[in-house]
Structure formats: structure tokens, C-alpha cells
Amino acid sequence: MFVTPESVDPYNAKTVRAGMGAHFRIPIRPFGLAEASLLRRSCALRVVADAGAATPYDRLDWGQPAALIIGSEASGPSQDLRDLATDTAAVPLAANTESLNAAVAGAILLFEAQRQRRARSGVGQDEGAAGPRRRH
Image 1 (spheres, rainbow, N blue to C red):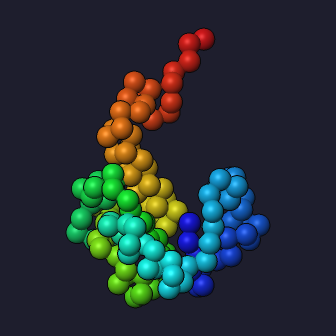
Image 2: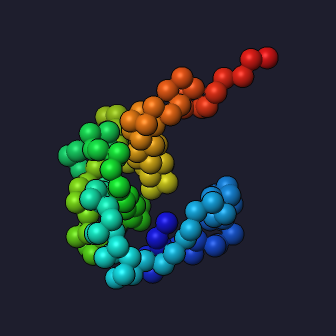
């Protein structure tokens, strides 16, 4: 996970609590020019989550190397990050629903990426999203 300079401190006590241990499972690094170059080279799909996007999140091919860009809830990602993107995607919402918060939107898009990857690999096909069923 890359964190831009204008992001909240990923090690803020509230952020660590909200992460529920994710801080110990994934690398967290600052984002700069070198990281932007790395993403251009390694991720053909670079998606900005945008409530106003015309493309629904589940119409993208998340099976390929991909980067998901989540901006602030108030102003979205910076123009530099928007320029890095190859696509924008939205979570379709019910009428009169304004938007989702950034964490919820990100979780939905990441779940779809994982769902598509599981479907392609055949892993978990008999287990479902929650894993194997246990008999009591």
C-alpha cells in the first residue's frame, strides 16, 4: 500500500485500530515518483474509484496486475494520481444515495478483484467466499 504525502498518518492510533491488523500483513510505503513509475510498468490497470464514473467496478478485468487509487472523501485523488490512472470505476448506488465513504468503496472494489482472481484460478470454488464449511 502506498500512502501519498497528503494522506492521514497510517500509524495514527485510530488508523491502526481501523486496520484490524492489516498493518502487520502488507507493506506500507510512501508514494513518490519512483512508485508512480513502478505502477506504470507493472500494472496495466490503474483505477481511480470515483462515484461519478461511468464504468461500474465489476465491468473491469481485475485479473490482471492492477492498482486501485482511493482519494479523500472530500476531494478525491490529486490530479497527478488521476493522470496515472487508466480507468475510473464506480460502485452503482441506489437512487438518492449520495456516495460511500472511501474505505467502504475501496473494500468493495478490492473484494471484486479478489472474486475475479479466485474464479479464474478455481481456488475456493467449492468453498464460497467465507472459506470451507465446517460441520458441527
